[in-house]
Length: 71
Image 1 (cartoon, one colour):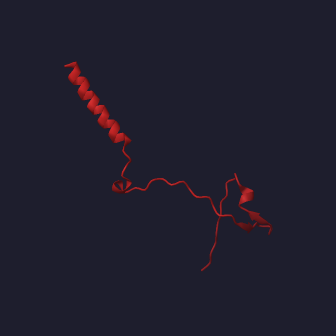
Image 2: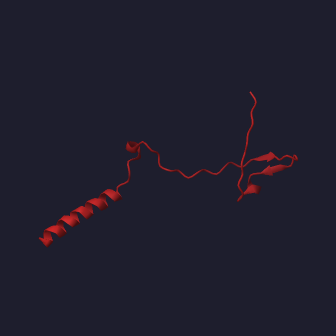
Image 3: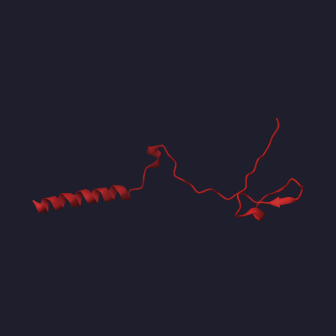
């Protein structure tokens, strides 16, 4: 009885490990895997005083860019 239980428990454990090790099928789940963000391209813009500010000079700081358009 104990050997039968041990055999069944082993089969169940191996099945769970095999299912957990398989890569998820994202297409069937209708989701996309996470992709890390890409760095912003290097650019510079004038600040409110007309001085050029580069994105590189702000590295490590939080930067919010607001682009306005009128049409």
